[in-house]
Length: 362
Image (cartoon, rainbow, N blue to C red; front, side):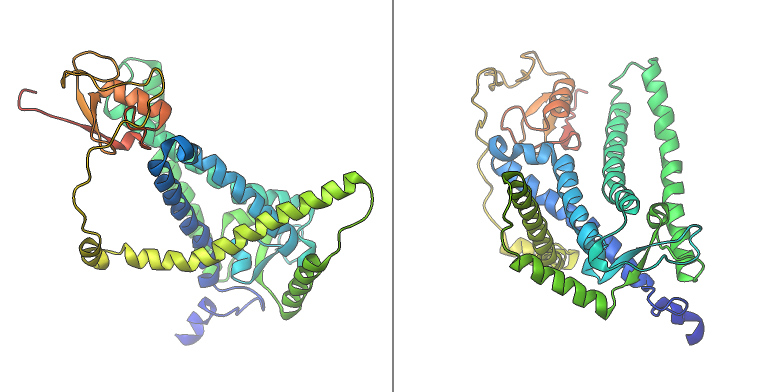
């Protein structure tokens, strides 16, 4: 049994082939970083909607741009993504047909142009598009649950068919990744992920020579003098240094943040919730004040049965769980869908924060 399971932790077939635990760990690294940054953006948006609200509204795009710059920096200088470099892995280009790797390049030379851009698109663009698709599916399900569109509309028939097909498409996508990982564990494939196969690369461990080359390159960059020459070359050099410094700051911050994430996972674990409640027990806060005093902003009506948005008697009473104010369902839905915030307080709000209220009369 030991011989049959040895390939799970050792490179039994390929000398520098990483184990399944290494590749799965590096895959899960960035998936843990994104929710943490999203939570930070949400806290900032709720603390000051006027100044930081854009971080929540445009989080997907801001994160994609930062991720694009970070991954481009590491692919160019380390021949690996940020997570792969964190676990001492690198990408090597496969020969035509994928039978064996091409002649090994220096790790500091980066990937060739074509595999570089294919890897960058698969690392950044595919996760971004999938996030937007999941958000679209969630919104369509909300609209379908509350019958926002007329029952006989062609649009509703189309997206109902789309919602019915999406789980099967998602199942096929996840199944593809699972089969690829099983083939990797059994030694039948050089790629643990279809994304690597599509990019035409495979993961291998860094050698001692690679580590020395990376250290030498880092020392050379930090000690390089300011080049003399035309103003254009100086501007280009300054821009490269600024982008390199930004990428280095992002990588250093994420490297430290990875360890901090472990603490957050313990802090918010179910076993620790009772101690958290005892430590953070505070009196009930006062009602939220009106934070948006610009012209045209909705003010609270004198009658409690009037919707602050349409100024009519409320129909289908719906409260926002982020602020507690009550509106007509259609008014609240349309406003939150367009602005992603509470119309009274300005707190960051999503469609999932709409809570329908029911009275004994209805």
